[in-house]
Length: 432
Ligand SMILES: Nc1nc2c(c(=O)[nH]1)N[C@H]1C(S)=C(S)[C@@H](COP(=O)(O)OP(=O)(O)OC[C@H]3O[C@@H](n4cnc5c(N)ncnc54)[C@H](O)[C@@H]3O)O[C@H]1N2
Ligand code: MOO
Image (cartoon, rainbow, N blue to C red; front, side, top):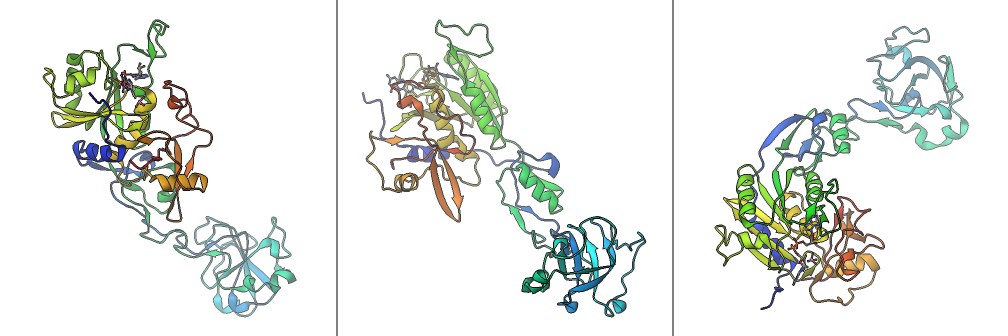
């Protein structure tokens, strides 16, 4: 009986997406400062423009372009950043600008980076382009250095002034719905006055690991008489966190009845159930025994299983239990991680990340040459980073890395993936 099907990862992804449909995420509104890691349910918009007022981009002196190209200005006041409406005299008193007297002499105001540029003033000359000291009392006058004055841009209206909304226009879309709120995005939102965000309620995923041989690295039982140190559950939970998902991890014994009981319990409050292990070709493959068609299990036929034309991550399954989708990943840690990226991750991505790249594109991007002949039938999977640069997808293979299992006979550790992180993506180097 042929064990390996000819179905490839691209087709399998379509099968998984069709069977494992997640319910629409509920939404809630949160203060922006508490929203790190949540997924935007609506586009993130700028509540205010940034800057909110014409703002000096330099420490220096504000002048009026109608006085230019004078080189010498009397200094009539001081504007420290953050003093509301504040122009101060040399004595520290409040100064009301009288625009009629301004016309009598070319006048300048000392101004700090970030301060509001008063009406009528439209150029800032950096302090180092003048004869003024950088610190100390307000000078009575300043003279612009000849070489700076000879530079035409020095006197261009708007020079060294950030206009209202120049960095972020009011109402600008800062991020589209589906993006994860990163620390940077939180900073941008707050800078644009957006103090609340509408996010998805985190999806809940139950991860169920099978394998009687598994023991935790913390366990005193971690010996050499057949115990295997388990790593899939925490790795999958951590991967899911990057998609705003909350997950539980549980390890059950290799009894179909125990597995079905665990799935039934978790189905009550989960949007998706992931199992690992027990999908191979062996005599004790518990996930298949519980859910494959043609057995006498009470849940027989709940899931479909295939051994994909792909390595690693060949054996895969998908189904539903009580209407809750289940994805069955292989037990080998590298197969589980590859299966996660190719088949589970797209279920949570409202903004697709093109993790499958046509062979030609991936090869060309990696080497500058056309595709090479695949060494083996079916798809081969390699770790890589995908970047989007100026509209083009750039694939960069993680240098010197292979997924080790198939570099060395039948090892199966995830060594070779360390050093990559959640940007790890897996292009398919052959087009199946
Ligand atoms: N006769 C054949 N045997 C196998 C085939 C095949 O085509 N014919 N395929 C191989 C491939 S490829 C894979 S992948 C595995 C899939 O097996 P299972 O999904 O049933 O995985 P298990 O047997 O449960 O475990 C495999 C291996 O991984 C270890 N493991 C399992 N869970 C964890 C965990 N949570 N953390 C760390 N390590 C884990 C487990 O102890 C086993 O050593 O089948 C091949 N066999
Ligand atoms: O498909 Mo398995 O994950 O290659 O070892």
